[in-house]
Length: 323
Length: 52
Image (cartoon, rainbow over all chains, first blue to last red; front, side, top):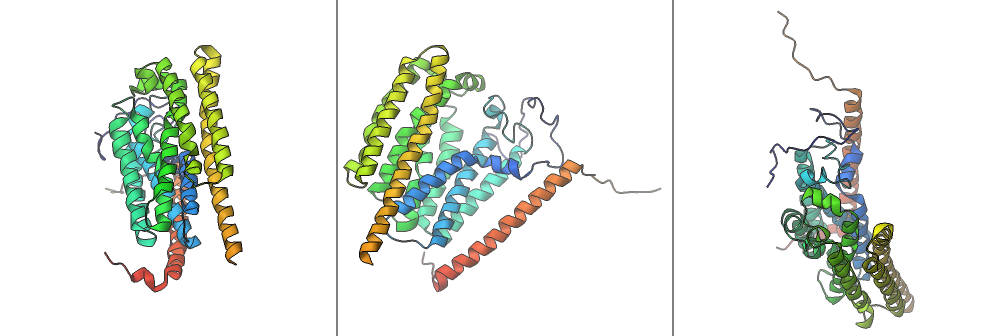
């Protein structure tokens, strides 16, 4: 394991990057923002927000903002620690070679310090200001993503993102806990949706980048089991996602609009997965995987957006009736 | 013999990036001051109530 202070031997920098690591940092704010994986953070913040709004009870807007900020910073800190640990393989993959550490804008030690500081800060502030249960869940999420997924599963098993997907599924549970101080079946259903959604989403990307992963020695499913097995797994998980996605509706935790949306969106997900399964060669296969990846993001945003709207409308109606 | 201390001369790029980092840290600290003040107002005396 690489420890802080170790000399990390990175391969030669990519073309156009600085020729040698400078003694004085040239990292600007954008490099530190990139360490936080802002695109991943946006999904985390959104699902965390839905967990908070869907939860029964009220939370002061300032505390709600604080909770969301802590969830966002905790997620970003996980990203920074992930980039610190994975600097060696990031440098070998075209998708990640432009990250701040492979480009030698930020040293691994700086990324480690940045990630650890933000992790501790986000957990402590969430605990002191909002809820210790939410803080404990956030701490566990960071631990799970960095230690269980990044350090252990990612380089060990092709099921890495199946189990590691749990880390990305926790934010709505944290949001719910921030409001209620407890966890119940509704946020666990949201957890389950993201958990089952992660494999087809990520494996669609892995199909497109399997050469990258093979070069870096990361045992992603397409590298270890092949593209055909990956396509079958994408289809199987997409079929499973259909009832899981609709479960908040048929268990009575969401309304008809959500039910119809989840069934239609889930059926489309299966259709995209079918196209991935049956398009095995050439440009058609690449296009199918790319469309699957793009649609899967829209699917999750769409489902949680409907949950959000239903919750807001439900609160407004309840407020009107009570008033 | 002249004994001048060795100094690291920053390049323009290093100066620029250091300045942008300093501004970002100042902004973050300012936001935290405002946030903690707002939270203290919201929670009132309850902020001191911390049963373990």
